[in-house]
Image (cartoon, rainbow, N blue to C red; front, side):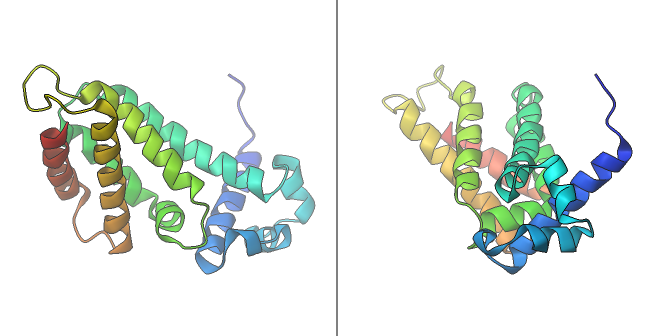
Length: 182
């Protein structure tokens, strides 16, 4: 694997941070490349060295977070619900600005929520309890939609309300609820 120059990483991080900060102030469609450049303290041309346009920048930012969550999915399925959810809630807390902007902001692209929901539903597929009778007669599609929508909704509520409970407390409560559901 080739090592990326630290200056490039620093610039890309500044650009990603700038776009998220700007999205807290105005709709994504109203943000210009010049706005991003000014906020990141770089020239407009620098943005085009790294990204095709603001949509590419946002796409790469979303992709990075989705990949990080996807990596968690790989080992989380080996744990019980509560223990598995703690790192997720800690991740949401550590990346509060991004998730609050993407989930709680009116001007953010709704495609992010849809992608996040699809990702969680995919992760929940292997968690449906078919050994006991608790899910007898229930459709996998309905259970996955229900659990995924509830999980994303709780994350949105938690973020919108300033994270009133610790990640551990949220993991415990949501873990119990998901275990009951799936």
